[in-house]
Amino acid sequence: MGNAANARVARVAVLVGAVLVTVTACNREDTKAANAAPSTNAVVTGVASTATSAPPPLTSAPVPKPTAAPGSTTSNPGQLLRCTAGELAVKLGTPAQVEQGQLDVPLVFTNTGTRPCKLYGVPGVDLRGPADPNGPVYSLPRVDDGDKDVTAAPGESANAHLIVLTHTDGSVGSNGSGEWVPTQLVTTPPGQTIPLTLTWPAGVSVLRQDSATHPGSSVHGLTVHA
Image (cartoon, rainbow, N blue to C red; front, side):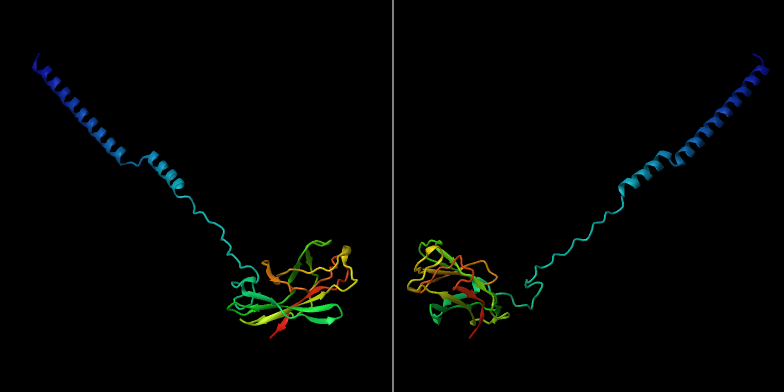
């Protein structure tokens, strides 16, 4: 090969090298640009993640505050309440004759608690005794004629009056009932459900009038008793 051919080969080699250098440089610049550019997938993923990981805060309706029952010490801290059965002692007073054949028997309730309380209304009264054509229990009708606002301090009392029609010779009660003598008196204080039991006075008979429209025996409302 002559000198001229060698020279052409050398120039071609130089040109090829220059092209390779240029291509390599371009590839490096493209790689840098690609690395520097933000990823489209990364942006989309970031937005979706933000939307799902931070939901709006939940709110709940305010819970209503409980209210106290009417008449309770919470809603009426200064109000006097009824005397409870556990705060009361009960006894029978001395019977007194009202008219022929009728007795007034005081039923005395005493506040044995440590607070003043109210005693008003008509107590329930059942007389219990031996077998009778009307049954062994005589529930007395109630007459609401007592004081409307009775306050009993500790140790103070109030009376309910029992009007009792006694048996007399020749008298006949409901369903042919004859001389019937109770053994117990069971009373429930007004506004309460717990009964209190007393022994009925021996020998005091009661004429049963269970089916009468206006019976001669009844229990009356509480009144002040010193």
